[in-house]
Image (cartoon, rainbow over all chains, first blue to last red; front, side):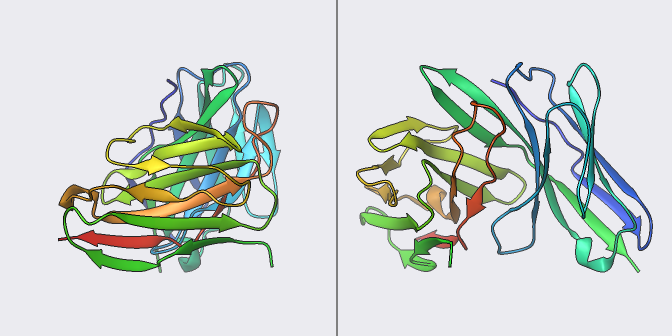
Length: 113
Length: 117
């Protein structure tokens, strides 16, 4: 099964760009890469999804190299409200049309004033 | 309002007393799943369902059961709860069955905090 590995925690000052990298060495051809944000006592919230190269939306960018064995979530100019846990998610086909979505342990981002 | 609703939100129970955590979504989503979240372990998938009457084990299915008799409901059943099942539980659904192109966004419920004494 594909497994994701992320740093456990990161600190950043307000206004800086933050890059969080996720490793997914066993990613399959059909798998997409999705990132979620979670605040304490809330369910995770979708941030961005990509398959290859670069994807950008109003809150983040996602960089995926050609081999797709890793991905990097980029948050421009973070603020205190970006303090949260960020999860990288890669789905896994388990055969017979079944597909499992498994989260990793996440990266706790702390934004410092 | 489109949402995933879990009940109860908080529950304290005792070892061995069967309980059910309900999950209902009003978005006609095909894929539904249950996760538990514990400190330092992130979110771990318990069970998932690709569609009605189709359920599969996730990473930590031991001690849990699920059913998917209707598209909108996906209850999580603890037949004989034990203290190691004390956790925060999340139900989630997505409109696009994963593995068939872009994975659909997962919509999460507000969570159910369960304590087993």
